[in-house]
Amino acid sequence: ALVGERIATRRPAAYLTKEAWLQNVPFYVDERVIVPRSFIAELLADGEGEGTLDAWLSDRTQRVLDLCTGNGSLAVLAAMAWPEIRIEAADISEDALAVARINVDRHGLQDRIRLLHSDGLAACPGPYDLILCNPPYVNAQSMAQLPPEYRAEPALALAGGSDGMDFIRRLL
Image (cartoon, rainbow, N blue to C red; front, side, top):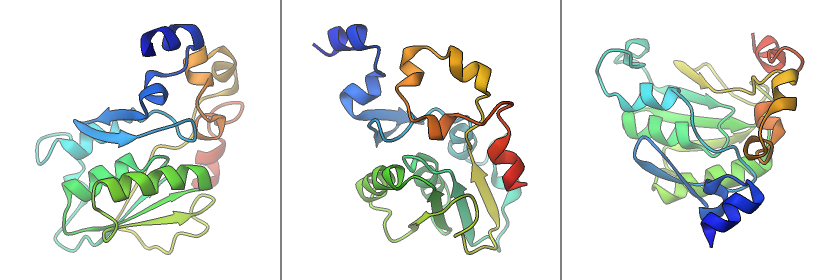
């Protein structure tokens, strides 16, 4: 039945099963968030090997921000990778934060991950030792050409304006 619905509707399979896996960790997902697929997850999960984010941390690192957290998967993976560090996870979408809450609670990290409703850094009380961010970056031409599977995802989390850099320009 799920395969038939997937073919008929072109909705992402993760929305049909309400689950997506990132770096061998399960996450709840639904139409309020994009399906997690960030390369940053590989940098978090790689431990102390080459190409990790550990080089950006020190024994004084205390606070990490996951900006544009969406379903909270990067915040959860960061909390798992660095058990001694406090994580804040921010998003402009209240709907996305509701899904992030499900995932933070599912993995028992509510004491270590604080969720913030914020437009960019506006409500984020830095300073932070590290900021992770997978912002909306798809340019307008690419957005118009996305297949139905991607158009089923929230445009707010994908669309980055005419050149894909609207959020990034504001952030910088």
